Amino acid sequence: MDFLLDLLQGCGIAAAIGIRPFLPALLVGALASADLGLDFEGTGFAFLEQSGFLLALLIAVAAVDLAARQRGTEGMEAGPVGLGLAGVALALGALEAAGSLADRGHPVWPGVLAGLACAALALAATRPLLARTRRRLDLDAQRALPLYAESAGLVAAGLAILFPPLSLLVLAALGRLALGGRRREEGKHAGLRILR
Image 1 (cartoon, helix red, strand yellow):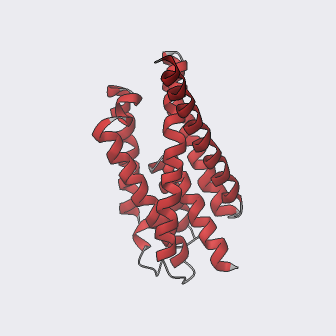
Image 2 (spheres, rainbow, N blue to C red):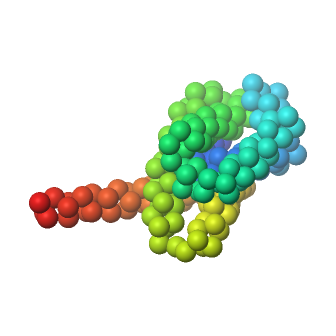
């Protein structure tokens, strides 16, 4: 039972990091350093709660925010920068999920696999949703959209740490978003084929 709860905690954290990578990871590291809900100390993942790593995450948050203001959010999520951020989210999700299992002495490989899968699910669900939403909003509302995504990531990470079974709800919601977006895209392409 402990393994399942720790795995759910790791899955929820990884999903939150897939939504937005840096602030949820910063929250997890800060809570772990205070031994609130999880503790990486004494594991191979102790660096996830050390001040140097947390400072690097904080700098990354500021750098991404600054770059998004200069290039625009859409420019940040497309091309090599978007791929780089997705890669960082996958890596952080795998590390945090593995750390969640290592905290209580479980094998870490299921956490790595589950973390990768959950972060990938969150990326597949939220990126297209944010892109579709951004196209419908005026410029001021578009600027606020990353704040909503950051908030969703923070809430998901906090819920996963405080009550791991809630991770199932987060994952179900992300799965529904991903499937809904996929159906929407397939429907749009089917309509284009009919026009030919």
